[in-house]
Image: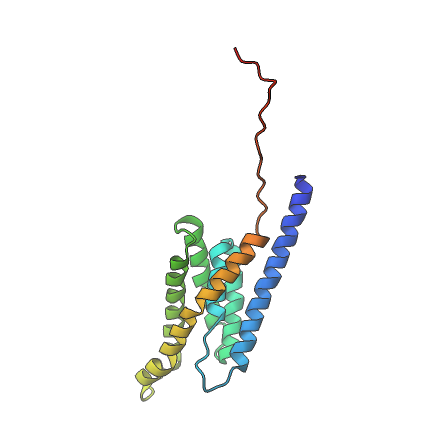
Length: 188
């Protein structure tokens, strides 16, 4: 394959892949902000960002984590930037782990996603409830935060396969060469 054609196809695939990532993030944001208030709505933005960081380079993963955290902040109505910073570091750390140390396997992303959810949930709970010593703050953690954390962890399953599908079909183009057997070789 011509190198220029390959570069154009890879550029097109990368652009299309990131557009689809953005659509996934925006649709999950819309669902999180329009879901009925009596339901415990999973924070779909966290598993999407963590799954994206599993397959992308560290810089792109950090940017995606920051944007996902900002979407999470606006969906929850919290201080803008807190979840952005937390998700940026979680996605950067996740991408570096998958880039250098850990295999891209479903169980690994489940564990790292649980860690990111736990870090984000505990920091959010601490700064909004525990530090101000609200009455029954432990009950708020058990009845509000814990179910959302569990539902968010379960939500990693479809997003992992969706992101993996996008990376497989819109990722880098592999060139396969077939070695041809030649009869022109002189054997002694």
